[in-house]
Amino acid sequence: MSKSLPSRAENYSEWYNELVKRADLAENSAVRGCMIIKPYGYSIWEKMQRALDDMFKETGHVNAYFPLLIPKSFLSKEASHVEGFAKECAVVTHYRLKNDPNGHGVIVDPEAKLEEELIIRPTSETVIWSTYKNWVQSYRDLPILMNQWANVMRWEMRTRLFLRTAEFLWQEGHTAHATQEEAVEETEQMLNIYAEFAETFMAMPVIKGRKTANERFAGAEDTYCIEAMMQDGKALQAGTSHFLGQNFAKAFDVKFLNKANQQEYVWGTSWGVSTRLMGALIMAHSDDQGLVLPPKLAPIQVVIVPIYKGEEQLANIKAKIDPLVAALKKRAISVKFDISENQSPGFKFAEYELKGVPVRLAIGNRDIENGTIELARRDTRVKTSLPFEGIEQVIVDTLEDIQTSIYQKALDFRAANTFEVNTWDEFLAKIEDGGFLSAHWDGSPETEEKIKELTKATIRCIPLDSPEEAGTCILTGKPSKQRVIFARAY
RNA sequence: CGGGGUGUAGCGUAGCCCGGUAUCGCGCUUGGUUUGGGACCAAGAGGUCGUAGGUUCGAAUCCUGCCACCCCGACCA
Image (cartoon, rainbow, N blue to C red; front, side, top):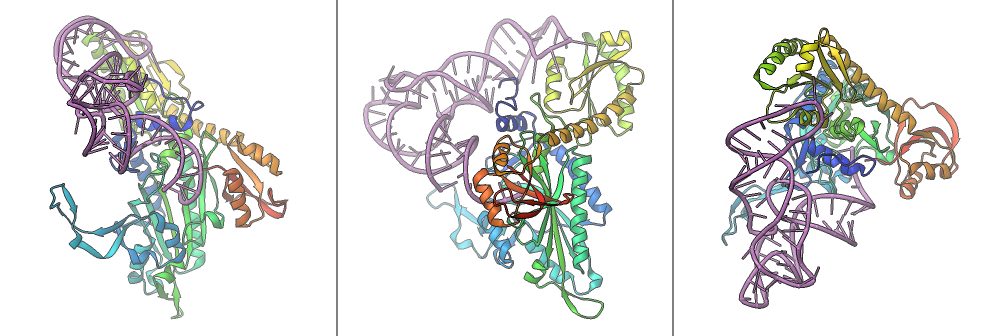
């Protein structure tokens, strides 16, 4: 194994794959397309879960759990839903194995065929709405504000660690409401929560918008999304929030009696983010030395590397560092004092850089004599020798500064790679360099499809904050009222 | 699923064309010396050469099937 990563400029996707493996985030498993999330990677996911879960709870949501397996018939009840997911469903057909009579291990027992086949959930709208039918009779039973943390499976052709795996972890919120207005509000609220999470925790700027009909979730009336820009200029859909209208209520016959004693169908939403956010996090900030993690999600926020000769020097260092570690822990900062002897300081420096630890402190005999300590920040890789006195506050401030400055850096990058284009020639030229293109579109699915065919670029979203502006479609020249964001995407 | 490529120790590889049971580096183990940017020396351990057949006295090497992975397309959070 060579010491350094492939560079981003050289081969972006190889850089990504190698980084995921080298930083101990995840690896491929014995099952094609399925990944093993390693402890270091999983602890980042746990931090994401914690932050999101808190935000969901604060807005009145509760967690529950629904089964992994779904009767096949459920999927066909909502027409566009089945069309969207049928091609990528894993199917359970039998419930028993037996010893091969020819002695070749075990075989599926043909006697044990299921009456009705089960599918492994690609998403849970169907089981959940079949259950909501039993839970809802009156407007007093509404709203249902429920979320589940679960794994789902979509049999993808081509997979990449975190970005697209056959099995992935996510949360899926499923809410039911008495009115359309309330459901739309919920959809927008959750989009805002996702955007806030992405920006404040992941330090990743996102564009909030709506999907076009082509890109909409199978079974939704309207799909809202947050879109982020990766360092290669490609777009990554980081979260979606769907207004389901009454589609699933109608498919599963979920009705309630309103105050006026009339039967009405329930209005629904669903929203989710997945372990794909891990991929987004990696690609948003990391560099050729390895991961760059935002302090708010870093499993280890501060690492302290001692440099010493002999037991006595180590004892002197410990005497200074132990109280500092205790003080940092008291401020809920996760800190690792790495006194392992089997690796040299140089090795540790490289290792913690690879793993994206935001702040690294190094202290040796020289520092003990001078009353100093060396602080290195991961984002800029700048090292400074500082007085030991007062270092605790400097660490706290540096963590905060890293959080905001990597956000700013990502924001500047996006700004530098977002372009307004007004002619088809301009579009063709610019799309090759990556980035977001803000352009007019005539609103037809056919035009969108044609542009995708010609350039591989899709409409990432119709931004929510985009002003109305008269213009002409980039391809057809037909009138348009608003610019949309085009990009090549993951 | 179509096109291209690759499977040799935990990882990265040489050997394959031209058959004779395997090279090197990292890592690992033990001992010693080290430690301010991926330490050094010495001694070790570790391989059904992806898999199933075939050809042959003999297969990592030649032939066939299968499987897995990577890259490029179509599908997708």
